[in-house]
Image (tube, rainbow, N blue to C red; front, side, top):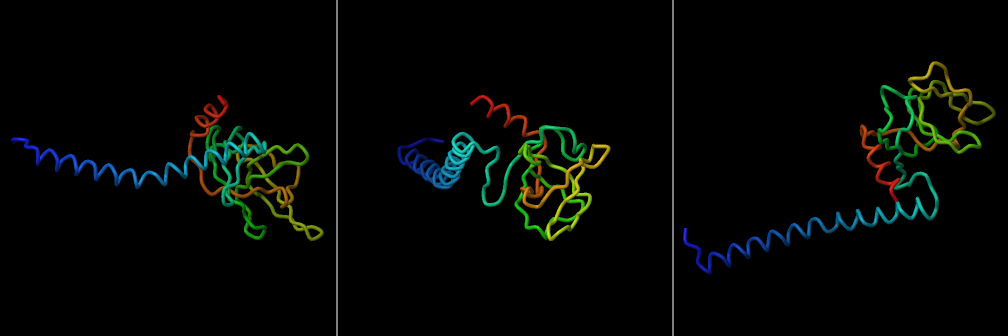
Length: 162
């Protein structure tokens, strides 16, 4: 095939058009990613939050083996804020423990109504016994809606470098 100036110009115009379409399509995603990174950085380093709430969802990295084999160390879990009446027995919830502020993810084994308040008895799937403390609904951050295996270790290693 002989490449004339007209053929070269048409090919260049076609490539330029495709390149522009790709730029138009990817720009909103890149912008969203940058804004999300700024928001997460602000929440983590300025507001000193250990997790970021985005539209009622939070991400956590599993750091112990108490929920194995369903949730392993290094798994990334996505939790969603959940109204009180929507937490049931066998749901896996994430909550703060007492005054320590430690965040724990365990399975609900019983729901107790007492003095107009709702409490949850929890247990790690890999633990021999139930947790000693009852969890009040006000300490519940949400229940697990999704997990990604092992990606949490990568994220933890990257963020610890900053």
